[in-house]
Amino acid sequence: MKRKTNIAALLGAGAAMLFTAAASAQTVKIGIINSYSGFLAQPGDEMEKGINLYIKEYEKTLPAGVKIEIVRRDDATSPETGKRVAQELITRDRVQLLFGVVASPVAAAVAPLTAEAKIPLVITNAAGAGITRISPYVARTSFTQWQLGVPMGAWAAKQGWKKAFTAVSDYIPGHDAEGAFTKGFKDAGGEIAGAVRFPPANPDFAPFIQRIKDAKPDVAFLWVPAGAQATGIMKAVRDLGLREAGTKIVSTQDLLPDEELPNIGEVGAGMITSGTYSIFGDRPANKAFLAAWEKEYQNKAIPDFMSAHGWDGMMMVFDMVKATKGKFTGDEAMKFFSTWKTDNSPRGSISIDPATRDIVQDIYIRRSEMKDGKLVTTEFDSVKAVKDPWKEANPVK
Image 1: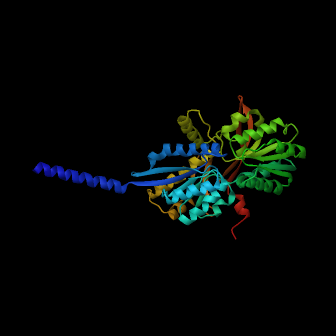
Image 2: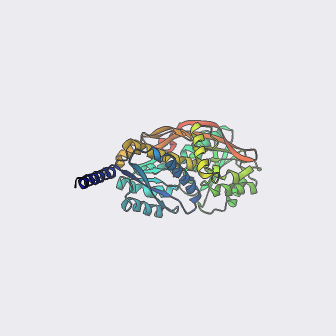
Image 3: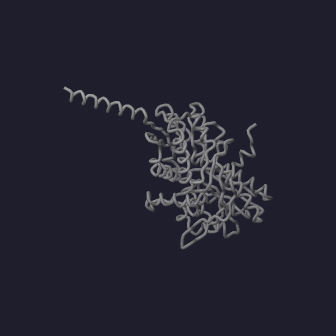
């Protein structure tokens, strides 16, 4: 009889321990919105790989009893679809954070929902400058096109190039890139000789490149979403002999994403771009990132700036989860995000501007060149701690 009593006591104690463990466990549910299909699926895959790699590398560093649960949804590169899946993540899946988003129109459609639900959205790509103003529950760890375009325009004008022509994809980031380069170039004394916009999906670049060639500008600023379109427009540049006609070409990192360099090849040599990240950046944190990437993906994929931005966005979320032990409100998460900073990003030191909830980072001016038969980008200049120029030029009234 005494033995049965002891067994019962042990079973009771075990049940109590299991209840205590269950009560102390904390799951943080994150809804990732990404372009798994549509014309931005390739950039979406690059971003996804960076996100997944950070989780795999650092999940073990979370506080005891805290775990991350990821719920993924495809926005199909469509604002309507993005808005719908965001609503599902908030109301049905009960996520505590939204994360990701490649396309700026999708982010603009999702942002109002975050204000209604008081659910934070961490943007790891969408670069439209005005998105963080749509909702106080949006923070961005990627970049804005204005951060890249203004320095590029200023640099181009300082080379003595007097007339520029802009050619960009006809949607939010293309418009921002055009406006930013134009401001930087004109403020430094240059003149915009012409401008064209082409469809964002499946464009035929040849007619637009021919228009640039006919205008005979000193320099052309080209912008397309990173991915296969970068190779497509550079092939049109080669086929129509734009550079041989005497026109220099400059752009942002979107035109020479690292994963497309092998496809672009020699036609990209000599180009100047502005960017936040390159696999060729000589920084300790970048070397560690690349070592983890190579181990995980076994030379089957090349990371680019979207991969690094996804990695950094998840780093910020993990830091918040650690600080709160996984228990936070939307307001508490945003308070943490608005003052977050790190020196351990693959792109260097980064921080969030508390006034705008946008990233502050160094912008690198890079030259592309052929080395050992491969196209590479080399950083030769930088602009330190750049805030979003659009917000500085357009303060909240």
